[in-house]
Amino acid sequence: MRLVIQRSAHASVSVGSDYRREISRGLTILVGVEVGDTADDVDFVARKTSTLRIFDDDEGVMNRSVVDVAGELLAVSQFTLLASTRKGNRPSYIRSAKGDEASALYDLYCSRLQQLTGIEVKKGIFGADMLVEIANDGPVTIIIDSRLKE
Image 1 (cartoon, rainbow, N blue to C red):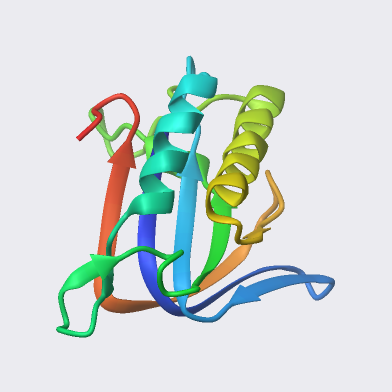
Image 2: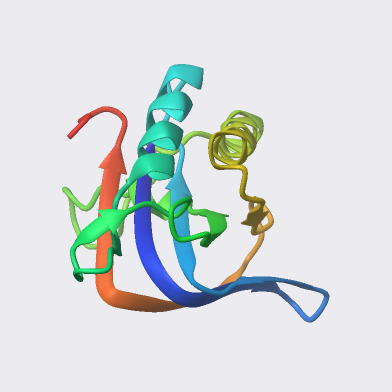
């Protein structure tokens, strides 16, 4: 499972004119589910996300989590995070989990993150063509990969 996490001043996800979710200060999380990911991968990345200290404390040091700053959470599924550009110029998405498997693990991640933080996780619509707007604060962008565990 691969996440791109951005500390956001505000962010939103929209699908057409009927669906919009937005947050103010918090984390915007792009979620890629890889073939072979399990509930253990979900638990690893959810725990990391919930405790990631990338918000400033009173001395301006990144020492606070999203929970510590009473921030908000927006999670958007994004299969392109697992793209391979090894051959040619057209990315391959063969490593991305398909349909039901990916959707279930994305939902599990959102549920687990909400359980760990006590913060509602606002979500995009899995598999939809979404418009994501992110005001990256810092900029601060962190990549977490359950396979690399770094």
